[in-house]
Structure formats: C-alpha cells, structure tokens
Amino acid sequence: MEMDIGNYISSLLYKNKTVALPGLGSFEAAYQPAVIDQVQGELHPPGKTVAFNANLVSDDGLLSGMLQEQYGLSPKDATQTLEGYVNEVKEAIGRREIVVFPKVGRLYQDYENNLQFLPDGNNYDVDSYGLPTVSFYPVARSARPQPVKERPKKSTVNAGPPNAAQATNNGLIAAIAAATVVVSVAVYFLIFGAGQGQEQAMQTVPTSRVNVRPGDDTAAKAIPEEEAPAETEAQAESPADDAEGADTERPTPVPGQQSYVIIVGVFGNPDNVKQLIDDIYDAGYEPYTEKAGKLTKVGVQRTYRSEAEIEAAIKDVRKRFTEDAKLYRW
Image (tube, rainbow, N blue to C red):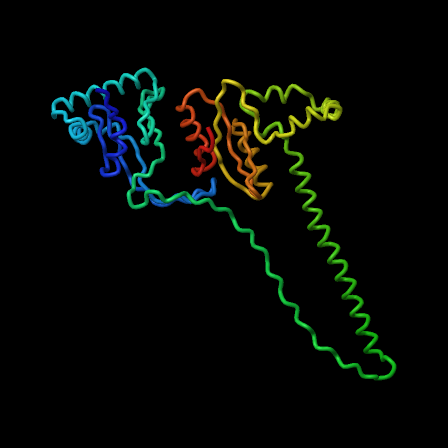
C-alpha cells in the first residue's frame, strides 16, 4: 500500500504548532504579523509561516496517529511505516537531493552538512487564511493652486499734471519690475539648467554595467571606445537587426544556465538609482534594473548551480546593503 505521508504534514500544521519527523526534526508553525514590503510594494496579511527545527527529533505521535486513522494500522505498524519514510528522507538528503514536502517546503543539506529549509509560503493561520496580498504604489501629490484675490480698483481723480512724488513712485515701480524680470530669468536657468545637468549625468552611466548576466561582460569589454561610432553606423545600415536588439531591459538567458535576481531598493530619483548601481558594481556584483511605472527597481543578478548559493548570496547582499533585500526572480 502506497502512503503519501508528506501530504499529511500540511494538514496537521493547520491544527498543531509542530509536526515531528522522528529522528530527523520537526516542522514549526510560528505566527507572523502583517508585513509591508517597501521593495516589492506589497502588503502581506498576518499568518503562520513554517520553519524546520533539527533539534526537535522526538516523536510527538501526530503522524503515526494520522496513519492509524487513515489506513487502520496498529500503533506498531504505524510507527514502523513512519520510521521507513524518515529513513528514505535521510537517504535522499545524504545524496544531496532536495526533498519536497507538498504545500510545506523543501528540505536539503548544504555544503557544510547543515539542513536548510525553504518554505513554500503557505499560510497556516486559520483566522487569516485566504487574505490576499495587496499591492500599493506611492501617490504623487501636487500642490493646490491658491485662489487669486482681486484687488480693489483705485478711483482715478484728475489731479492735474504729475508732481515730483508721482515721478519717484513711477521710477520705483520700474525698478521693481526690472528686478522681477532678472529674478525670473535666474530661476528659469537654475531649474531647467539643473534638469539638463541631471539628464547628462544619467546619460554618462555606462549601460554595459547594467542588466548584464555574470560571465557575459567580456563581450561588452572587447569593443574599444574608439570603435563605438563605427559600430553605430553599421547598425544604422541594418535597421532590422537594431529592431531585434533594441530591447536591452533584461539580458537574454544563456541556454542551460539559471539565474536569479535580488532586489535591493526601489527609487524614483535617478541619482539614487545611479548611486546604488555603482555601489553594487563596486561590491563585485552585476547590477539589475527594472522599470515599475515611475519607479525603478535596482538589484543584483547572478547565476547559480544550487539553491545553497542563493541563500549565501542573499545573506551577503543583506549584510552589504540592506536587510530588506529580497529574492525577486529565480
């Protein structure tokens, strides 16, 4: 009789805080309050997340009791069946395989022979079960125009020819008008001149350092800067090739190679985007950017051969930049 013991772990976690695999460890469901993810722009509801504790190896009787109830086994037969299942899990982990527990997560052994667990993100809190994740974006507010108050009209009285006081007032008004024109011109150049300077600064960021898959940067470095205009003219003669290669937002994946992205921050200011890209590059990582409306997501992209490398990279990125760094795509 084939028994899928792994499926019973998920159902037991809805009613129990821990479910033990005797001799291997226990799955623990811990309450987690609502979380605001500023990087992804998401509001996650409260719930219970699952972790694996390798120190709790004693049998709590939950899985054996489930086997007795579902298959009518005796306590002795249920215990032997559970021990056989745990031994199969241990052998698979010893062969460096990833053991999948449906709706719970994946368990594997890293290069230091420590057990690592990746939860599936299922919510085991019955009270908040089914609440969706809400996405949000910053609201850009513009200043409200102030109402213009009408000035009372001055009554005109024929006072005869202007005197010296009127001439002085006219000269003062002319001086104020000239000063207003000068200030307006200066403000115009300060605003629009600074905007052009920022635009030129953004144009100087080398695109070869952004969204380049690790290991593919040699192709970008192989073309000297003096030959760049010649390449542009060749591209102008073949518009079909330019149309196919115009989309450089994301790198083209190399066949047989897997990659992942860790988002470090989300910015609306181009200067902050450029600064973080330079910091990521100086730290030895390949930068990654993605537009999301008026915001820009900035992160790290790398290739991997095992999930243990992903965990190590996340720890290093959080240590170097921010604890809010999160795995975005893999």
